[in-house]
Image (cartoon, rainbow, N blue to C red):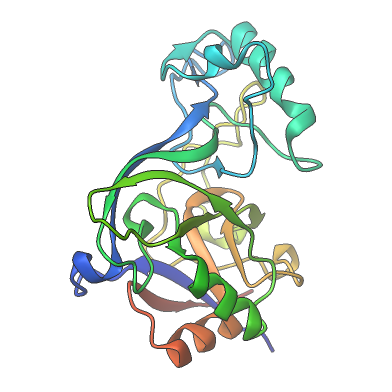
Length: 241
């Protein structure tokens, strides 16, 4: 039976070894301003599609400035990018696209970016994981600038939302998601439980669909990381119900 692990940034490892990233994705949907359904102004903090390229969109400049917009404008912009997305993709306010743009340093001997709910790694690390049988890994180019003369070739993994937290994690009096914008006012439980029926069977790395800051890896991914000797990730096994 497959086991599942919450992936977290390992703070005990020197960032110069694992790599340091100070960057943001090139494009993004605006946040939602004053939802007419629930009144909230919000945007997701961890829904990234680095493989989605908006450079051929005539309106690409409208996706470059972080801001909040009314629902009608959010819908207009969302529909412009929908044809570029994987099938059945939810596009909550604040979803980001395209390569990471910014600065980076270090040798990237392990995994970087987990403190920002993403994963950046060397190309040869990705290839080694794939050779070890880890499934569903999609490496995407970055636009990171290094100061060192011989910078590493680094990629960002596209981690799509696939699984869900189990309903038993939710307080019994929790209000349902907003019918207009989909916002669920839920703080991450201290002891998350995964909904077994929702978990993918074709990938070993993904983020949760109803709590996108949570990155999940299978035991196959964990074993490959430990056998490869890479650092930067700590693993916490989560129960499945």
